[in-house]
Image (cartoon, rainbow, N blue to C red; front, side, top):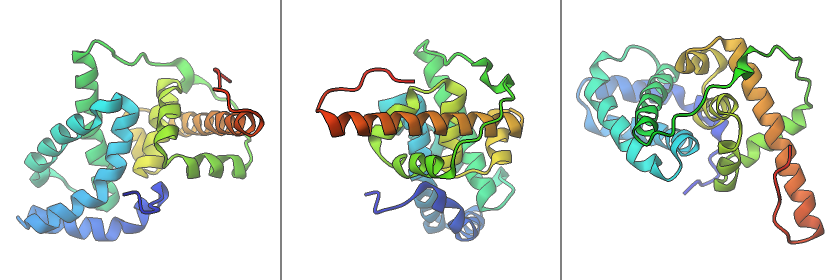
Amino acid sequence: MGQGTEPRRGQAYDGELGAAVARAQQGDEAAFAVAYRFVQPGLLGYLRGLVGDDAEDVASDAWLEIARDLGRFRGDGAGFRGWTATIARHRALDHLRRQRVRPRPSALEQDVLELPGPQSTHDQALEALSTEHALELVRGLPPDQAEAVLLRVVVGLDGPAAARVLGKRPGAVRTAAHRGLKRLAGQLGAEKSVTDEAPRTLGEST
């Protein structure tokens, strides 16, 4: 299913996605299906990080709204991914409200810490994020970090686009994503060393 699709590759197809969206807005149903195939994997990964097993249902609701409001969308392929992520996020938050499990906002975005972190650590986390297990780890991050990582890596949005979806400053989202990826890389590294030594389950590690 994944067929080696890496999250960051989303941007490579933005030209084709933009063209498909433009045709879909003219009433071309096949083009809408093409746009759906480009966007759905990342959107579903994002929603899994927000609502877990209910992601498919929330995605269905989001696509109904996307199809209904398609004529109002203005922008290119990258813009379409940001627009669909915003709609999916609203549907996810509605879903969580109904369940009374609203994510609590974190004060993390106020932090202005320098975040060195070697590039290899960052890449290690990016590579692993295509797995189901990594999505579970992402859900364990503070909410602002989890969303920033999901939007940047899984949906493939750039910093300003992710910031628009979240209604935050780009610097805050960049910081949250970097901290989240660093933390994930640390967890993934700790798990690897534990499983290399002995087959026991990993406890909470920070």
